[in-house]
Image (cartoon, rainbow, N blue to C red):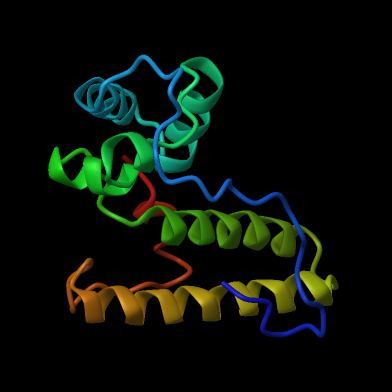
Length: 152
């Protein structure tokens, strides 16, 4: 998500190469890459972690270039995704940790504001995922239930 509440323009970072075809030196076939993705997903890795492992350990620079599908698409086809989307889970984890901090440090106003901003991001994401049908319409988020939402 964009930086909505600050005047900053964001971080600059590296960009992926423009090339959409797999490199000629890559020895993995598309079905082998899909098997690796499913195996790593069954071990409990997130799609971001899977991409990093495939890049660093297996030398696969881009799953999308090799298979024509994104990692999350492969995971949904094989039904190995978690009940909540990864970005929503990460935001809920941030709120849980911030809430622990705020309970210890009552006067930390910047942490309280950060928690409010993160919860507003969660609200926008929930609205989006309900519209797209990723989570059910009756699904609700409360700060008290956040700890129980992430249990596996």
